[in-house]
Length: 301
Image (cartoon, rainbow, N blue to C red; front, top):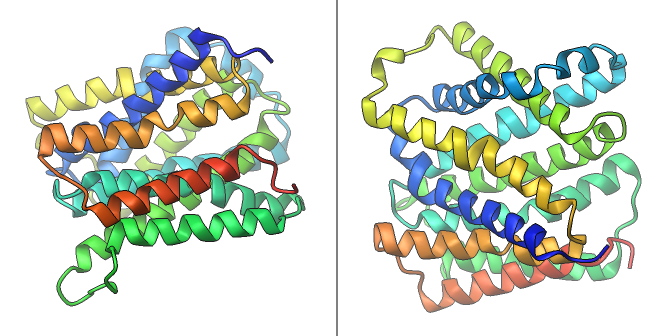
């Protein structure tokens, strides 16, 4: 596949939007319950998709039971567990080094390859294990520097890091299940179904928990942020990303996706005044470089 500049630009733009979301937009919803935020971030885009993808209902009705199970796994892992974990992590750090939480999401390809080995029988090479180990070391240095985790003085930062890694694992699982699903369903319909199922699951959890839908808690500022996310960094960025992904080779898209961590660091500095220490920068470089290497080679090389 020949790499087209439009496709590369689309992937870069989508990745930068996700960096903007994690550092600038979603953290400004922290006055709301986490599960309610996740519900809104899926329900509103799902409603907006109706005029464009209403025909998906008929196509989804033809899916086999096993395909519905796979679709449910995608929605549960990526839509519910992954999104709840990353939103909670962003809220915990309270605008302090938000870029660290976003950067830790870059572990997603590592988790995806490991899960593909466990669930799909793909073989892991020694090279993969080496680069994955270096990525883990880089992630540790990014989060803690040369220090040991201090649970006594900084439990929220440690919890946020753990939740960011849980989100990466959940999104990685969604990627693996999504690969199986896309054999019988195109991306537009799969995205439509994922947002719809996630909306139903989170709505059910809100009702079961007894919290309901605290719409009265939404301020005008909250509605503005949710609307911007829905139109840009939410479903808009996903469609832009996959539009570009169809037009560039995987190795090119992996490099373009580095706009996510780079934009996160830039936005965190520009908006929140956060600066990574030299050892954190070195850890981020080691982590991103190792994960890029993992992503641009097959797991079986």
